[in-house]
Length: 133
Length: 101
Image 1 (cartoon, rainbow over the protein chains, first blue to last red):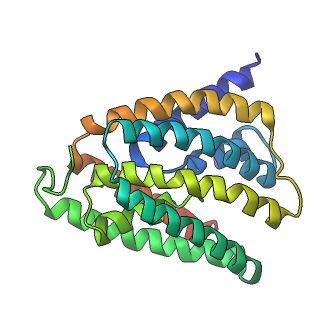
Image 2 (image 1 turned 60 degrees about the vertical axis):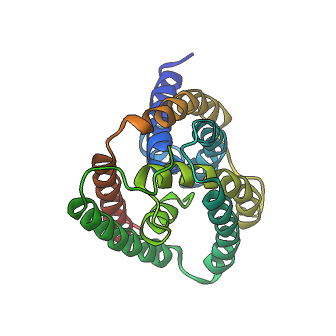
């Protein structure tokens, strides 16, 4: 094992922690880590990230299901919508410039984040009643 | 993009789920999306996705352990701090996307 292998394990561990706790795939950490840290091309970074996300989401998602953390019905609906969205996105992406698409998503993230932040700061710290235990 | 940052705000703001349930639900939903993304990625690239298998293997060793521990830790993170953390991360990623798409 080389130093780079250990760096990949450590970086992967951090990405996994974030993935498990926040509920994102891990590409957010994998892609910049691979392009900046491992000096691979964007294409290889995205392919490698995608390959790593599948087992990461499986481990994290199954752990959530076993601990009863997730709303299974919502996950089925959102997962199905997400699959359709991914197919639709791939079709749209052929016709729309990718940088424009990335910017549109960026604006969407900031807008949603501000709404989430506003809600976090205005609601009390107790757990919402909808929380399943 | 796996779509986590699209699903989490929708689950919280629209479906009215708590932040913890939304985060966990998002990760469960990413499983089919990530699996579906593999063939989509195939077609878009016009060939097999280029994967650095050695790096992928070591990433997965770390990330699987991390994902297990992160998923187990979720229940112990206070809801309010989690909400703020997710929102701050989303603002940073959103700004990055707009500035360096």
